[in-house]
Length: 77
Image 1 (cartoon, rainbow, N blue to C red):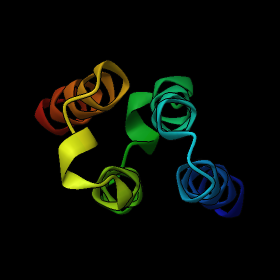
Image 2: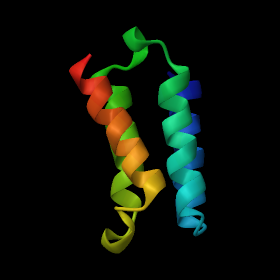
Image 3: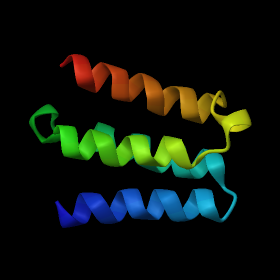
Image 4: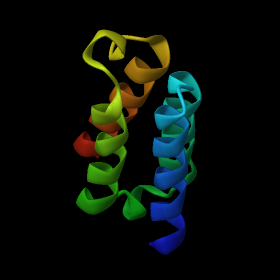
C-alpha cells in the first residue's frame, strides 16, 4: 500500500506544481496498473483526493474526466 500511496502523492505534487494533466494521468495510470482486487475503497479515495486538488474550473479537463471515468468503473466492479 505504501508504494501505491506514494504514487498518488506524486500525482498530487504534479498538480501542486501546476501540471494538472500529468497529475491526473499519473493517478489514472496508477489505478489502471492495479489488479481489480487491489482497487479497494481506500485506494479509490486516494485517487479521488487527486481530483479534489484540481481547481473547480479545471475539473472538466480531458485528463480529469478520464480519471473520473476510471474511478466510476472501478467502483462498479
